[in-house]
View 1 (cartoon, one colour):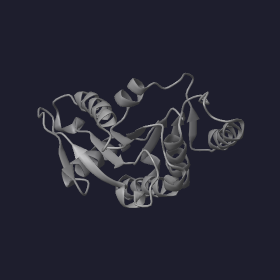
View 2 (cartoon, rainbow, N blue to C red):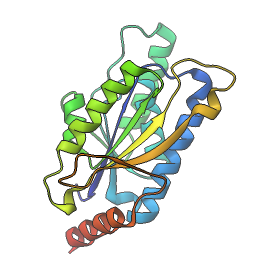
View 3 (tube, rainbow, N blue to C red):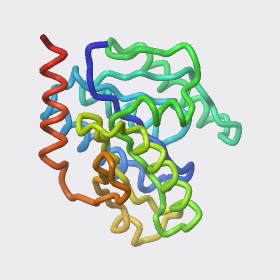
Length: 209
């Protein structure tokens, strides 16, 4: 595919129903921002489509005009029959979109980590167990950098409360996490740094020739 930037999303399984619209809005905001930088057709979401967060990410990617690389349909055993049917119907719509490519095999967590330039992580940072688990995922993702500034990666981390409370909306926020090649410490940013934008546009322009 001619797109140069791949995005993956990994999430805790618990997404309170009351916060789904907010999470979808964040996905769309990020995809729109990246599209303005690189162009819609130069970006692809890579998704296993195995949980609610990935479903919302896939819908947002298609609605924002991105490419979608999606694994075979997976329905969690704990979904009730009604939710399983809805998720299956949404998958059938997604797989038939012109910008969608269905890959032949299931996409594992390690596949997502290794394939992507940007990794969106959705988890409850106040939960120490989840924080530790996703910190390890982030470290594994950044280990894929090869010591070259041109391979610098970006993590977009969304704080998502595990349980709904009246104050939960205010607890949902995101930040950009980077670690420059050769460095151990990660840095938190409120905007995508210009240096990584220049890296992406250079790759796009190089491949377009």
